[in-house]
Image (cartoon, rainbow, N blue to C red; front, side):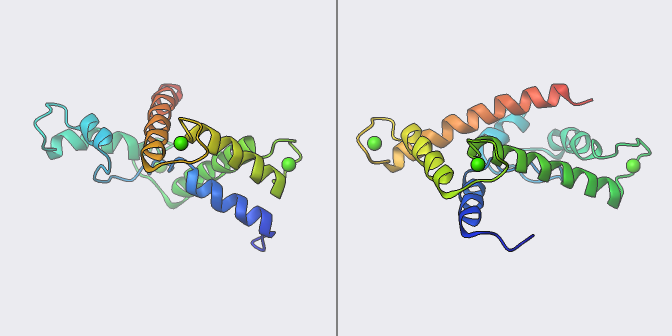
Length: 155
Ligand SMILES: [Ca+2]
Ligand SMILES: [Ca+2]
Ligand SMILES: [Ca+2]
């Protein structure tokens, strides 16, 4: 199971580099300006614990699927498994072009070509740091939109 073919290992390495970091449900200090801004309700540039607490609580207690007020080991495992399945599906969805349930070297190359073309904003055959940053900014925006949608769909 963990003995990956070199091509699959490469695919996974690429995918993990590019994958949207799965949002951890456990409470944390915001990493990006965007997340910070979202929590800093009165926009005074400081997060008060009361600004963090409601969202952090809600987010984590979403794992309490049987609603007994406790997030158990099993509930955490169920959630992790769900994240893992989603990640697997996302990798296959993006990279398994012929939908045979496997990603070969050609598919990695095709994916990389697409990725590169998207990032190379001025199509001059090279990705500058500015182009790379623009690419990630655009992706972060798409992800946050998708997140917002996903949240509404959650019970
Ligand atoms: Ca529970
Ligand atoms: Ca395939
Ligand atoms: Ca360029």
